[in-house]
Length: 217
Image 1 (cartoon, helix red, strand yellow):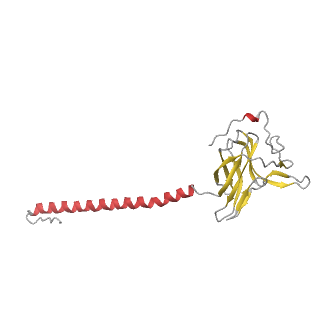
Image 2 (spheres, one colour):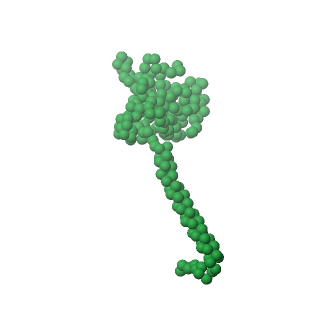
Image 3 (cartoon, helix red, strand yellow):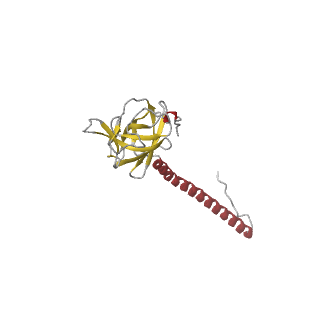
């Protein structure tokens, strides 16, 4: 039940003082309420901005499926999988970075040598363009990501992480399982040898056979 405040029984000078004090009290209450509402509204307005920033940071460039890497104790290995462009603009995969795992990382294509009748590997100029909604398949005997001059042994049963670089300046890390695989014995095209390796060979040299095992980053 509201409390009725009356000043009629008070002397006139005292009545004025009480009335002034009551008016001041109501004004302070009103200002406090407005300030609290304003702070709440300001806090609510900041939430969508933070949420939008978080979504942009976690957005991926391509969608990877069936990704895997070939186990190798030394020299070189390959990374395979299907990369789907789920966006509405074309993207071009231009580079690959394996960090401390390999001294050289490149995008390779496999072409047929009409003279020898065998397939040869060579570095791709300009990268792999993927149209909106399209999928780029990287597979043994075809286009692939190549890691050379291995600094550690890539063992079956572990995971390998590499970073993909795109034409729009964005990067995306992918992690794939490592498997044993006996295929993918392609040769390099003339002029494509790296560090004295003329073939995609699984025979380790005595010096490289003692490489330490790669560790996940």
